[in-house]
Image (cartoon, rainbow, N blue to C red; front, side, top):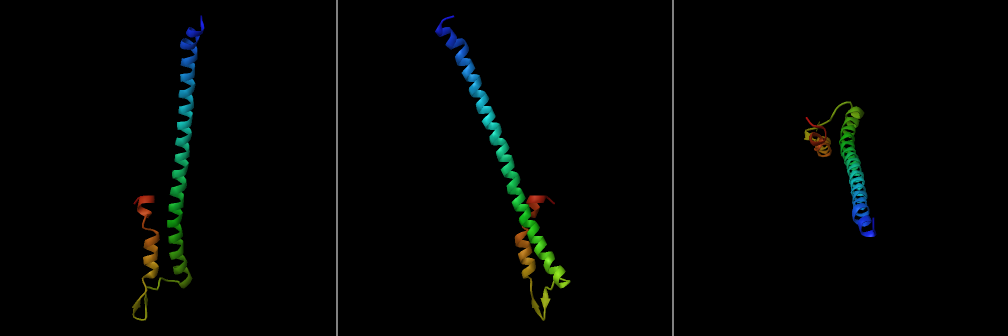
Length: 95
């Protein structure tokens, strides 16, 4: 076997296989990283909804009720704030 045959029969196919293996491994690592990032992003959004619910419940437990009406005026601010903070809950948790 001369140099030319060695290069064409062994070295080039071996290099190609090695390159495919490296690309496959890199793609798999990228897939794992994207999956973990998605989980982290979902956690942060779900935690924001949790904090919104927690704040509304804190108001209710602190006062014993949700005071929406005080002396002839409406105080819907807690509910409006709750809705703003939890508006993504259906998307994040489903129905």
